[in-house]
Image (cartoon, rainbow, N blue to C red):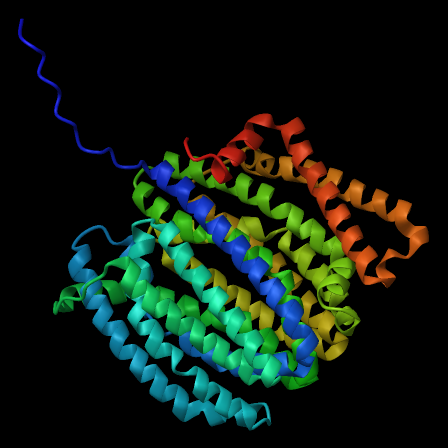
Length: 501
């Protein structure tokens, strides 16, 4: 009797797009949460060593650095992610463009640094800008390797690189600040972070440069990327206009308060919500020819982003005082109302955050550009006027004027790509609203019960109180999600925790 011939093992199946996307969300969540924990812990130490004016001085110098960072890739990274053919040759072409640009930006940064010092009437800004300019050389080596990792959706490797960079930044900043409590602790820490990130990106990506350059591909990449450059310039002005206006009108110390409040108030945006954009961009690029599937993914992503980000917004609004006193001390108590305003603003962020990757992945970068242009035209006069009239409160409140104009335009452009009815769109937010109501009820109830004990006066009771109220209110949020929409809660659990789909 003939023995059966064993089947030859087939090729290992490739992970599906959904599996890659879910894995990417998991790794990005772990990455951003870990980075935020490191950042908060680091600042809790530095806030007790350095003065608010020190952080304001660093923020002033970074305004110019951020401006040059807009040009560090000419939008070639996004164009490379969206591209479908000749990827290897395109990556080498883009690498040489970015490499040359990095050295050019370093030279320009060195030459124009005195302009920043003159504008803010502070000569220290000049030397800080010149020291920070070296980062453009470092990032020119890492930009394309990092982009290829993103295109391949290897978010575990990206997370490792970014986390190591964050640890280096924190360690260097604290060590230098202990010996020399000046702004240079922040400067050299950031430079060290960029250097380590560049080294790891080249080593872990496996990218090897070849002497290939195609004028045709370069033109195609730059043609797509021109909208990203324009968008980057607009976003830079929008993101930094607050620091520019506050620094110019209110001074270095007020800018220090404003910068910290913005860092805390926008962490939903920078560390959680917009991480979905980085994951969803390559996903939408793969699905761009199947509009119905794009629509399904967009609506589901909007629901999940809202569900995940809403408790943080509620926490900022209702627990700002407790968080500031516990982490930073009474020296920073004046930023509490600013953080609360940022929290209100962040309630709307999920709608805006979910559209950017959709526009880029479906080949419409101009939509992001036009939205930023309109937003900026509204924001600048509102920011200047309200800051003059109401100080830091007015600077933060100007964001609501911009939101009132930009939100309807954003949704209308989304509907040009994927047609949906309002009865399909609005229910995506119901679950997070119900859960937020339960969370608020718990916070207010605990405050009422603990009012006679003045728990915020001493450090240990304050820590216990903040830990208890945070745990119970988050538990109420999660329990409500399980009660109102168990299917969605299970899917989010699979998204963030389970290894298999």
